Image 1 (cartoon, rainbow, N blue to C red):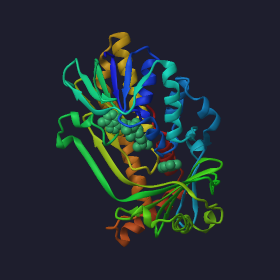
Image 2 (cartoon, rainbow, N blue to C red; image 1 turned 180 degrees about the vertical axis):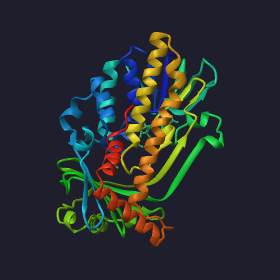
Image 3 (spheres, protein in one colour; image 1 turned 180 degrees about the horizontal axis):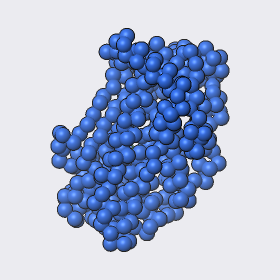
Length: 389
Ligand code: APR
Ligand code: PHB
């Protein structure tokens, strides 16, 4: 089989890139290791920047997002004593939208066949070949048969644990990583949210986040040490801990209910600076990971896709190589800024095992400054709604 672009991975990055290329009449196929059901079973983040919702609208893929997405005009910090609201609409003129990543993935999957986007699910032993040259190919096994796809370019959209990044000779000085000493324990439940805004709380017992998916579905998180086991967190224990960390005012408004999903995700900052190697381009989690504080992960995957789709469209439809030549540099500039924002919010809101009393006072002073200073709030709001492309 032959195509112009072989896309590895059917997460949001791979599917969106596929749709963006099909909209420009560029041939592509998506090769995914897991089954469609498995991909749809993953619960991930859910706060979308306008960059992300604009792209979905432009591609005509926003019917359900426009109906079910919740417009967010602010968010709040809580530190036990007060709620500091960041009025993102007033500070930036922009808003964010709550709509689960799982729902985006479902919408993109459902629209694929109608737009000539072929997705091969359950592809085993996916391997990339000759990526340094200009005639790369991908092999994989499906239904017991070996398949080969020849293409001009490969887009590695296969997430942090994918095979694409491993196909690039690693240079240690271009890999940047921080592994945090905690993870987020998340619970999804069919109960109304406890507050209008998403609330990021910092409490002496640890971090907590009150988020939502709809007026009747909530998503909450607390941070836990990396050696904590999910089995030790009954729903009741988790609701009790959330109530303590979110503080009495929010706790009074919490409706508890059985978990639809509960999982622990470790926090990591990671940037692989080689986003291009010959004919292979990385996008999304394949190239970078941010901690979820600030909800940048999915939105960064989308900005990569916007840059890469533009560059590939330039190449195929206008014989213009410039976009591909500058892709890595342009994408990484936005990645590093979002990495900085996510890392600094993580630092502000979490306690680290090595923290001293001085570190705790620094965090309190920073929250005091944010609470009283509009310029500080504006800087946070601009990062939260998403920096310009
Ligand atoms: N071959 C083919 N597909 C693979 C392979 C492989 N060797 N390895 C992984 N995959 C698939 C995964 O099963 C997954 O469906 O690639 C997909 C990658 O999707 P995501 O991990 O969702 O990554 P991405 O599309 O970059 O999405 C951005 O933003 O909010 C964050 O982490 C969150 O997933 C989110 C990400
Ligand atoms: C979520 O709703 O899952 C969510 C919200 C905000 C974040 C991270 C995750 O910063």
